[in-house]
Amino acid sequence: MLKYGDSSLSLWSVRSIFVAASAPMREQAVGPVEGTVTIQSDSVLPATLRDRWPYAPRYANVNGWRMHYVDEGEGEPVVLLHGNPTWGFLYRDMIAPLVSAGRRVIVPDMIGFGLSEKPTREQAHCLDGHTANLTALMRQLDLTRITLVCHDWGGPTGLSFAMSNPARVRALTIMSTWAWPMPPAEFHTRIFPWRMMHAPLIGPYLLGNHRALAGRGVYLSVVDRERFADTAQAAYETVLPDPATRLLTWVWPRWIPLDENARAFERFKWLEQELSSSKLPALIIWGREDEVFDAATFASRFKRLLPHAEGPHLVTGRHFLQEDSAPEIARLIGSFLDRLDANGGKQ
Amino acid sequence: MTEVTPIKMPNLEGKRLSFALAEDRVAHYPEFRDFFVRTFDLDRKGLSEPGFVHTPSGGVYAFIFIGRSGAPFPTGLEIYAVVDALEPIDGDLLDRDLWSILRWMIGGIGAPWTVEDLDRTGRLYRVPATSSP
Image (tube, rainbow over all chains, first blue to last red; front, side, top):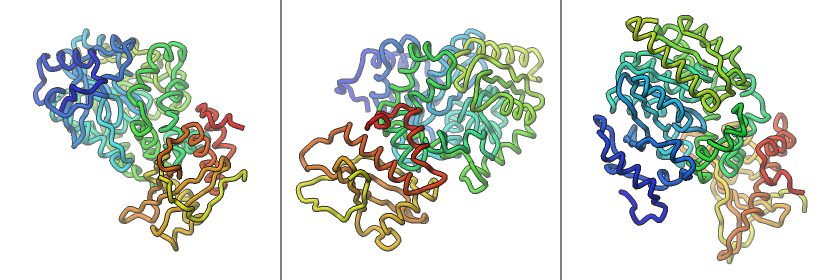
């Protein structure tokens, strides 16, 4: 129920809710006035950022959770998937160009991030559950011929959705992620700083109390740090305002398999196997300056998994390459889809 | 006193337990769980009483251990500051005390985990307590 008495209900929230409620509703999409809405989530964006995220908020009940997403434009759907610790804002400069190119652009916030519901217990999160969350949204919107754009944990979740729902998927775009069972990089096996950062009690302290990943972590993983600090960092920090809201920032690292006994080992093994036989058209885009998921190791491995894929195209960017090269990435995706259209969907 | 030290249950009259930090998965790395089992004799004491420590600042903290069906005990852990019942906590002091507790924990777990690596990680992410004397 809307909390109209909440003093944090901003004019922006009211405007956004009005816009969402009066906009044509997608079939089965749940508008914010119809379900439970936490006004806190809608009102925390600073005024300086609201102009950069002008999209009507939409909400769907997925797999038992309240998921926020935006749904802009008309045409075949392009679904933009973020990872840890970001939200749809990561794609803010890619939505308009893709809509202008004749695509319907859907950007969900993963449960636990952005403007979506944020569970407060670690056990509420698991890799398969997050894939099921995405699957629920795709089915509620009855999307077919989807182009999935996968980044970070949007990779394992989005690609698992694609491999288990191939009839709904038209093409894949893969950026700075992985899809195989052993540690994604040597970096992830090191105690300093990776394993220490999310270790028991240290994760809740560093990433929760001191927002190490949502704050400085993202800052360190872009190329133009000054511009990022001036124009974007607040958008990532303000949607995770309290330690409890940052839970998923230390839970996701714990889902990276480090050995064969890891919880997600078998899921990643399956995912790698399914991808290796997938014929879905694919595009690989990577940040030239990405030191953690370095292109030489990761983009090349995806190319071996999907030898028919276009790319890898290298753009300016560290792990969060969208922060440095969004227009170029949007152009690459747009031209990739145009070529598929021209070739009858074949790569 | 310069180290975090386990102590017996203090007199809690006129005190309250003020929530400080929670961990849902203390055995994510099994050696962390082993440290708490060893330090607080949990195989024998189980859920019968919290563990308590005294920090260099003079603070007292309670460790409430949590069990889950089907998993070795403890699976989780909540840390509470023991404070005067009606007094607010000092947030900066609490933060420094938690850092002291984490350093004590890592030191007790031992190699390959080192206090030096914890300090480096804290400095990388600019945790204020890492610059405290």
